[in-house]
Length: 194
Ligand code: HEC
Image (spheres, rainbow, N blue to C red):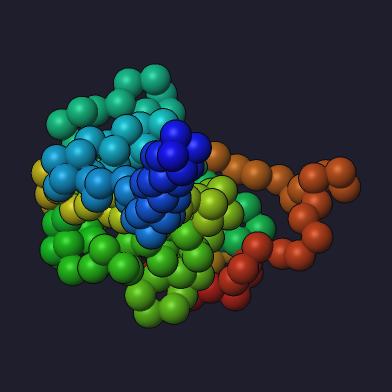
């Protein structure tokens, strides 16, 4: 009698334990909660600062004095190399001189693939090859933040073809052998002024 009671009790405990394990296996692991819009903007701002977008896109940055009132509004300091002269563009949401008409997808494509909405390549020294490693969450947070900054009306100089002298530019000589890229940068030498 005792034995049978003992077996009944243990087996009912075992049944409860098995059921508990089955329930816990059936419940999918909790997904991390999606970012709130505020968290997304804060994440985007953090990334834009840490990734150094302002170094090139905010006037004064490369002289050690970034102008917080003209954040990301482009620079008049050109970058001359085998590709001609490129200028870090106005990436504020101004709809005529900035990228106000670009969607978040357009911005993500530009920073991860190095291509504008019209398919034209983004030239050096924009380091999109590094930004290609951003996850979707990170890249879209960057796009959301860029779309939220104050629009600044500032028309950045058009790109110059190779051989055209730029008024103010950092000039890269042809790369030394060690630094010579395996392939020329996309669009190098053949790009029309933007
Ligand atoms: C080392 C300098 C540098 C850094 C850092 C940099 N950019 Fe750029 N970026 C450029 C230059 C130069 C161009 C224009 C290239 C050309 O004319 O094709 C450009 C172009 C762009 C464009 C295309 C704009 C247009 O109107 O065509 C976008 C968008 C952009 N950058 C976003 C960013 C973001 C976002 C970051 C940070 C995550 C960043 N850039 C960091 C130099 C830089």
